Image (tube, rainbow, N blue to C red; front, side, top):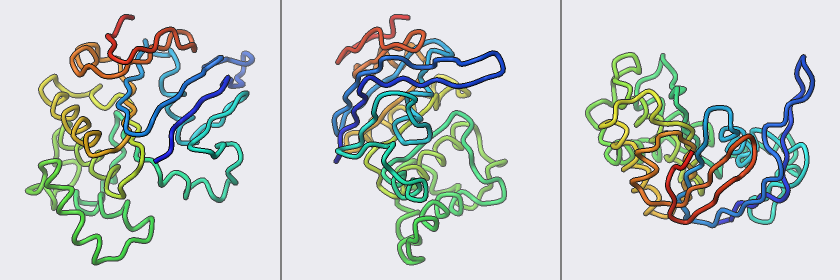
Length: 231
């Protein structure tokens, strides 16, 4: 399983008022199997950093490696194949409203060419992992926020990615439901998947006792193996 390395990474954007630097001088190594919390205030650069990891964004300067591969060396037409190494989960779920729970998860398998037999076998297993066996024929509109996030999580891990990138997964959830999601992430990590959690939820970060990378104004200001949310 590859490591993730940032070497002197900067990310800038051009806007109507000129350029804006979202990240600067980022040097970072995430080892296979780690659980890493990326924390900071809104606008600090958390989402930009996570998007650079799975090549949704490319650095303006510096290099991002996944194993020995530079993300900037990957041809555009091959990016979808590269991104199969990653599962992604977002605050707004991004479920397909016209598909059932089963179909939403199956769709992720269909996109990578998995056989119908595999889909029929694997989707029920992953539904059991996230505790949604009884919801397989429901549509997103019939689910609670926590249930939608569990479907999103199941879809992200159905193809066994090396890395799970999770951006503010508990932002719209109550505390009890948030902990359900975090416990699932910890379980996934224990099975060997690298988990990168971008969050501003202080209670979660302080209680799971994992590595904490703190970003402020686009820079890493703290990186502790067993950290607290200090901003």
